[in-house]
Amino acid sequence: MHHTHFLVREPLLDPKQRVVGYELSWRQSATPSASLRDALDSLIAFVASQVNDEDDGWLLRDKILFLEAVPDMLSADALYDMPPERTVLSIKAVELANPDTMAAVQGLRAGGVGILLREADLARIGARLPTMASYVEVRFSGADVATQARMYAALKQSTVGMIARPVSNWADFDACAALGLNAFVGKLHLTPRPSTDTKGLNPAQAVIMQLMQMVRQNADIAQLEAVLKRDATLSYKLLRFINSAGFGAGREVQSLRQALALLGYTPLYRWLTLLLATASTSGYSPVLLETAVVRGRLAELLGQAALGKGEAENIFVAGMFSLLDRLLGIPMEEVLANVQLSEDVVAALLTRSGKYGPYLALAEACELSSDLVSSLAGAVKLGPLEVNRAHLSALAWAQNIAA
Image (cartoon, rainbow, N blue to C red; front, side, top):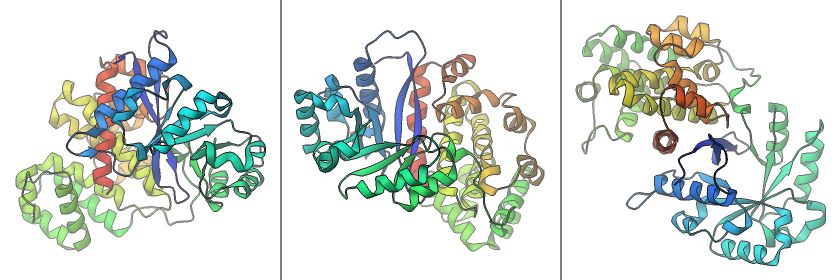
């Protein structure tokens, strides 16, 4: 295993803005010590070791992982540790001119592994496309994405998935979505989508905010229960969350009283944060919500060793809140005006400073395929292995919650 690389991810969205998969890639922290093949091999081996569990199987549920490939690694042993139907290797079309590479690709496809073709001349390949790939990346150049997307849609084979890139604004995303193209979105999903929805808190969110205030003030359980009883779906969701995360340790948690007895107040606060985000009504929540959950959990795991479990739960809250302005469609100042947060959480949210800020900044860098990952990790004295383990663990955790 190479411990000189950091893992970064980019989401693949379907036309409904749901995350259907992630492209995972290595960011080098040091000078390139290994060949591309070795680096990519070790990426696959590492991912397989973390998210394909002997007992529990594929921890990322229905997510597909896209990994870059070079011809000489198409036979990599590590590939056997990945579930083929959840694995897609991306390779440049020009590589398939080599008969050995083409044979290796066909062998992998026969075994169920997906192949994404990059830099393909679709007009030239035409009808042969399905024999070469299961996905094809279509690249947009210049301004008129809608026209290009239409041209691609006309070429679209029912058997070959088309994946658009780069999609840099929501209008382009919508043009692709209308034609049924999936898209890699870079950081587009973190930019506010022009929305006609009413801004501000909906009734469910107002109740959750109230509960969060009460928990911060250590209100007694009876008072909390009284507020929760006003919103039956909320109680149901909260208990479902708590049970999905396995807190009940083998027994189903059936009441808020029982949940609090098991959890305590800080963890309850953390669940309320999660609930607040899922109670969002704005029109673009699936990808944002998943990003918020992964970011919160990743920041929490990154801070656990240095700050301890209790403090780390506050980092989770900071991570979730860091996308709440976009989830609720209101400015961060307004979010902060609605709920009292500790100084440390506020410092993390506004300037990525204070004791939680650096962990939040690091978690964020992992989702922006940023070259800052290495320096941000260094600042909190974390090495690639710890960061990468936490990253994949957070991705897996988010699948359980989102479900």
